[in-house]
Amino acid sequence: MKHSRQSLIGGDDQVFVLTGAGISAESGLSTFRGPGGLWEGEPVENVASPQAWKRDPEHVWRFYSMRRKAAALAEPNPAHFALAELERRIGQRLFLCTQNVDDLHERAGSRNLVHMHGRLFESCCDRCTRPPFRDTRLYESKADHVRCECGGRFRPNIVWFGERPFHMDRIVDELQRCTVMLVIGTSGVVQPAASFVHLATQRYASGAAAVRTYYVGPEPPANASVFTRSFEGKAGELLPQLLAPR
Image (tube, rainbow, N blue to C red; front, top):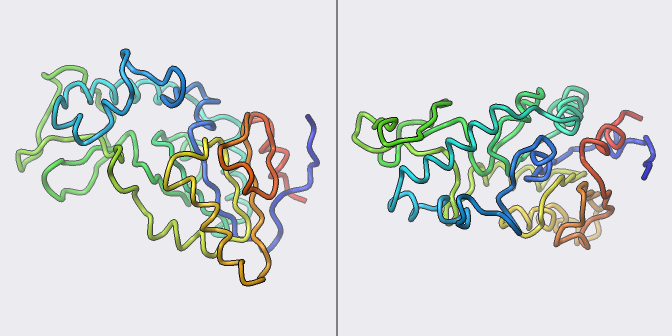
């Protein structure tokens, strides 16, 4: 289906972009959600929680080592590049929040972004306050594991089930000032991200100009009814058209 080349973004718009697993899936990365979302025959929640880490850190690291290997081989797709080009064009008027932990946005050229669920290629100590650090190593066996100077274990700098997402204060601030919200490749069920579109629009209930909300993805999200308009299809095919300058 063809879409108009008219850009969704006006000259004064403040743009909030939320990306989910769908945009990374177009680069070949597994989503681990929904039907078939298993790793070694078990739900991914079993290797992505504080309880799993306490029970078997070696097992958890094997999962994230596998994800690091896959992410290192993946390449940004046209959707990633379209968002990076939009940032180059409108600068600080664009804020990108991703639920993904890979670095495909950065490798495409995006700079003004946050990873609300953490970064795959970072590790942190599970005991002390040492800042997270860049880490591309693979921890595929117990012999590969190293400990922090404090004696704690290094864990992936990932937000696990039951933990608070990163950067929430800044995310809420950006949602409260955006005039356009663009959501790409999300299920619309994972909280708190699924509620972001409501946070972006609720301040207009008093009668002020309404924020424009758009969804792009291969199938409608669970919260499709709240969007101004949805564009169904691959983000890599649609975004270069939708974000083209007027």
